[in-house]
Length: 146
Image (cartoon, rainbow, N blue to C red; front, side, top):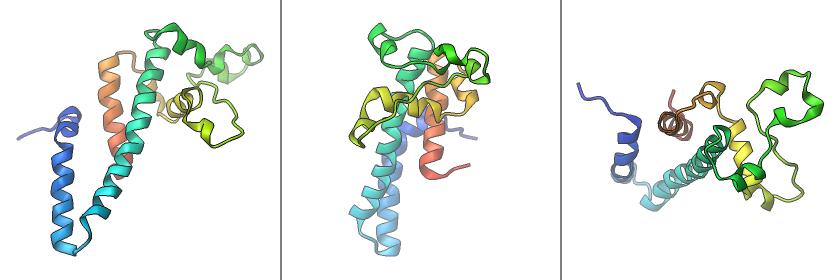
C-alpha cells in the first residue's frame, strides 16, 4: 500500500487543489475563482504562521542569529516569575499592541504562533523533525482534519 508523508503531500498539494476546484466547478456549478480563493486563503494564513513558528523554533533551540533572539523574550526570563509554574514553560512573551498593524511584526507574530503550538510539538529539538510535524499540524488546522 502507498503511504503519503506530510512532505510529499505538500509537494502534490497544488495539483490536489486544482483537481478539487475543477471537480467542484463541474459538479456543483460553483465559480472556480471563489473556490480557489477560499483554498488559497486558508493555505496562505497557515503558511505565514509556519514560517514564524520555524524561526521561533530556531530561537528556542539556540540556532538562530543573535538579532532574532533579542527581539523575543521567554516567559521564564522574567525575574518576578521565578517561583511560579510559568517559570518552567516554553512560552514567549507576546507584547501588547495599540494597533492591529503591529500584529504583523515578528516580535508579536513569532511568540503568538509559537505559544499556539501544542506542547509536544514545541518539545521537539531536531529541526527537520519539527518542520515535518509542523507541516502536518498546520495542514490539519487549515482543513479541519483529525
